[in-house]
Length: 370
Image (cartoon, rainbow, N blue to C red):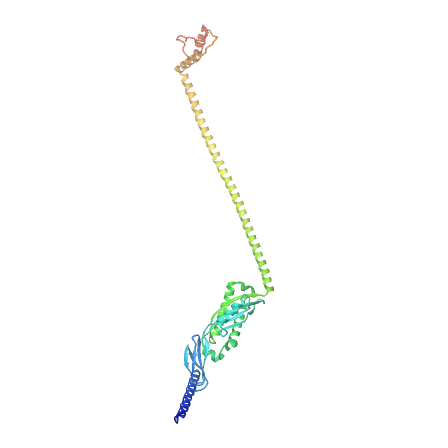
């Protein structure tokens, strides 16, 4: 096999050059990656960025807050991040919450912004203990202040948030007595006061309170029993009081009804008395009118008799009397007088009454025997 002089040497030189170029290129890429990772930092959309300078004229925490983006940092500078999401501090006894729900909540919220602690044992003003499930929702408002006072990560939770949260709940809810937890108005007012207290204390340290929630509360079994017995006794007392009020109202109603009936009876008696009085007055008036009428009739009758007597005392009157007397005897169908006796009777009657018997005697009636 024929070989050209110097070919092998050239190939070896080319291989060494390519190998050197590859190594330099790899070193350059590695250096670029190292430089990029060392001099750039990325702040996510749900984060705040805070710079820390270890070298230079100004060391320590910078006063600038960085929003989401990619930033170049110099040597000795570190960009620390804080979550801008809502943080959850959950004091719970675990009663009434399923395990699957708790796992899902932890998985969604994460451990950096969600902290679960034991339920708060509130000592009430009357000496009883109430276990309260309370949730605090808060967020970071001033990450620079938090970084300066508490450092990085979630150190602020253990060093400040937990103690402030417990103390705020105990000092406000502890003002109530145990039974006041059942009173909605008192309970809501106490929770609002606790929220205002925590809001003031957290704002001074760079945090913002979003909401304070009293999710549940539990009494010790002995107190629940005594409270139940007390409530039953109170309800019985209220029931008895209401029943007594009902009985009083019924008695008042009966009294009113009796007064009404008495009033009706009195009114009826008065009406009847008035009716009797009116009837008596009417009867009296009628009697008086009748007496007056009878008197006037009697007076008129007497006057008529007087006038008749006066008329009979005259000559014509005696004649009329005689004729009337004769007519009486005409009605006699059966008689025992003879005609002569009859004529004599008539003449005597005329003479008695003063009638002149100069005329012929009247014919005897048909009933007189001749």
